[in-house]
Image: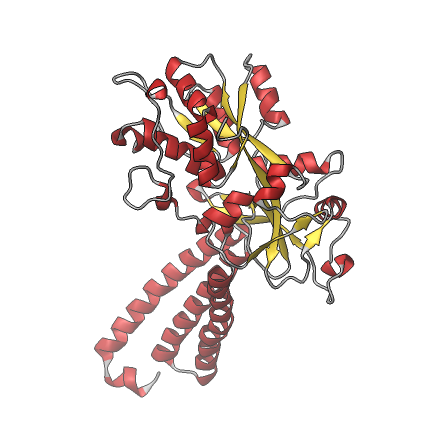
Length: 399
C-alpha cells in the first residue's frame, strides 16, 4: 500500500469507503448504460455513452491506484480517461461545427416576424372592405395551414380578427399538411390553407364521409435547391425523377466536374412538398428518405425523415416563397427546371413547369364568417394582399 495511505489511516479508510461506493454505483451505472446502448443504438448516443462508461471506469481504477498503488493500473486508468476524450471531443466538436455551418432548414424560419399585431412584423397591412368585415360578437373561424402559406392567412387574421383571438392557437396556427388535414376532419378547424390533398388525405376524407370544398386563391413554384457552391445550375424533370428514384447518385453524372455523392433530402409523408414530389414522380417509385433519430417520450427512439441540411452535395425541395422569403439562408441556390428559372414572371406566365396552386379548404358547409374570409381573399383587396406578400394571385388584383 502506498506510503500516503499508511501514514494517513483515516484518509485511507475514507478512500476505501469511497471505493466500495464507487464499485457499487459503477456496476449499476454500467448495467444501465449497457442496456441503453442496446436499446438506443444511435451513433451520437453510443459514442457518448461508451465514452462516459470508459471514463467512469478509468476514474474508478484511478481511485484503486490511489488506495493500493500499481504503476500499470495507473497507466490503464489514464488510458481509459484520455482515449475516450480523444474520440468524443472531436466527434461532438464536429457535430457542433456541422450545426453551425449546415443548420437544419426548418430551424431557420423566424416565426415571430409573422406574428399578427406584433410591432414591425412582416405581414402585409390591408384594409378590409365593410362587406367582408366580421361583426362582433360572431364566432371567428378557426384557421390553420401550411407553413409556407402562413404569412397570407396570418395577415388576413390581423386585418379581420381582434388581437386577443390571434394569440389563441385554436383560432390561428400553422402546421404541416399531414396535421392540418387531420384537424379539418376532426372538426378542429373551419378553414385550412394548403395544396390539394394527397391521395391518402383524400381517401381519409372519403372514409369519413366528407367531401372537401377547395377554393384556389394563389400560386407558387415547386422548387429544387442546392448549395451555392454546387456547379449545377439547372436540371430537367427527368433528371429529378432519376435522382429521387435512386437511378442517378453522383453529381458528375449531371455534368459536375468532380465526383460527389448526391444527398437527396425528402419531406415527411403527407406534407405538401412531399405530395408534390410524388405527383412529379408519377409511377416512378421514390427511394427511401434519409432518416435521423431523436429521443421521444418515455425514452423511445423516433426515426424521422431527416431535415434538410445545405451540404455541398445536397439537394432539397420546397416552395419558392418559403425558400426565398421565410428561410434566412443565403447559401441556397434555386435550380432552373427544364431551362426555366422559378421567377415570379415565369410562374405567372406558366413557362416554369412546376407551378403549384394553393387552396382554401373546408370539410363542412362554410359559415357566414368563413365565407367572408374566402370572399375577401378572392376580392381585389385580397388578391393584392396575396401579391404583396410575395405569391402570385389566381385572379388579377384589378379584376
